[in-house]
Image (cartoon, rainbow, N blue to C red; front, side, top):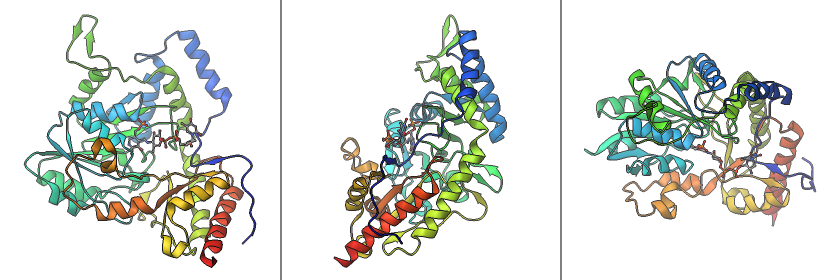
Length: 382
Ligand code: T4K
């Protein structure tokens, strides 16, 4: 281990978007310039949607200008109302999508290994008003798909996945997008695969697709027919072009993240007070979307928040994804929570997402690990 490690000259962020070769993007821009077709289901979006359908091996795809609106409209299209059981350990947009549909969130605890909804707690939270489960494949870790599907079937609930982090994840070779009644993916710039901003719904029930399309397009059926109150959440041609250009790079983006994850794990596995979540089981092709660790203050020497601040002194900008829990934000604090959320509360206090992205150099990963070790050694000894 090196000592007296200097701060990085340039900031190291928790993530950076992959930028495809500029000339590839420019070729597409030339087409858009020539078409003078910028949005409203243009030719690039149509080509992109078709490519994505093949990529994921799913039929019903509809693209949106971001994941939040995709989820919000998806819930509306499915006619979800009443109570929905969901996780407090996610990006706040998961619950916002419920709120905008006047749905009551019922926050329920998570599993300690991969931070996804704890099925036992889900089952215990079902009431006569429950209409759906909104689960999150947080950090790309798949939820307990079979058990959740069984609970949903037995209680006649819709099963909706916020798969914002799970693009590229497969189970036994099958895309994670093929599970549940509705899947939402985010293609935000901070995601491993992005369209600058963007979102996507996968809807297994074909009849619903039309409804989602109407809802995101101010619900014009024809020039003179508006069929229901809707909104505007369409993906535009530039976004579609970015998504389309990026698609072929997905395997290489995941491979680089796999290698970074491997290196982090090797370097950090024996650092006292750093807990690494286990990798998903063998049948999962994971996407390595994030690299979360948990910090045990007593063993590590400093607590998570102190470490987060100390790392900034080295020009490293980690993130406390996801702290605070959604139910602790001012706008959701008045939502009654029956579950003590013991695991979620513990995880939210200790979690820290370390930098992981395609352009992160392996030497930088080693240096981040050396800095963590240096902070650990120094604070254990003082
Ligand atoms: N459900 C879940 C589970 C989600 O995680 C999200 C979004 C959604 C739903 C909603 O999907 P969208 O409507 O966003 O499509 C970021 C993202 O804005 C958000 O998309 C994401 N989850 C969330 C987990 O992370 P912040 O506030 O952490 O982003 P920001 O701007 O601080 O960016 C983080 C770092 O990334 C920066 O420090 C530097 C780097 N960065 C960021 C941007 C935007 C760049 O290098 N370039 C960039 O263009 O929320």
